[in-house]
Length: 189
Image 1 (cartoon, rainbow, N blue to C red):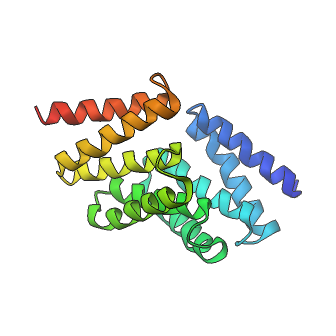
Image 2: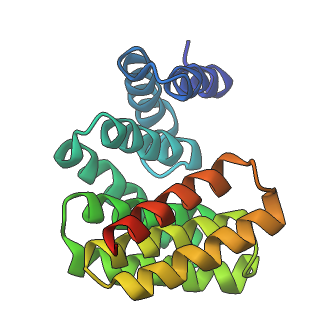
Image 3: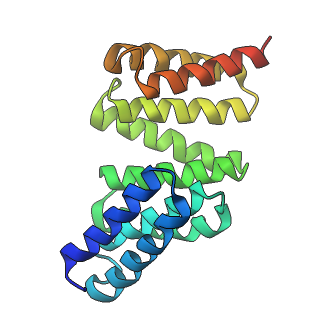
């Protein structure tokens, strides 16, 4: 029951269920994986930090923003210290905290984090990597929430154009970003 591969498998069942939208069914798997990972592997093991982050993301998706925050912040603090500022898992954690703050309408606190992760992803992955494009879309959402509609429109259009080129017209990320752009344009009349 405590073998590291078993813990990864427990976490993966949670991932599968969460990916199917079965968030309540996923939660006990995530909690078991996290509790056992802390006990068996320690609080700073890479797999434990994946479980910490996943628990935060599940709670975030369930709309339990206050409950998600300590998990996201723990993952970010430890990943920054253990993996460094440029590691993709650290950037994922920066993004997660930024998006959580955006969801909590703490726009001033979210902005530097979302800009930081975008700049680092552009530098590390390039301007057209799908993960970078996701960061552009996230920044556009922040700008929209701040009422900076022209700047948000510019970012959404840039993301749509690049998603089309990289992933195609019918990819879910292209369509989702196109929907965000359409909603913004409707807001602008």
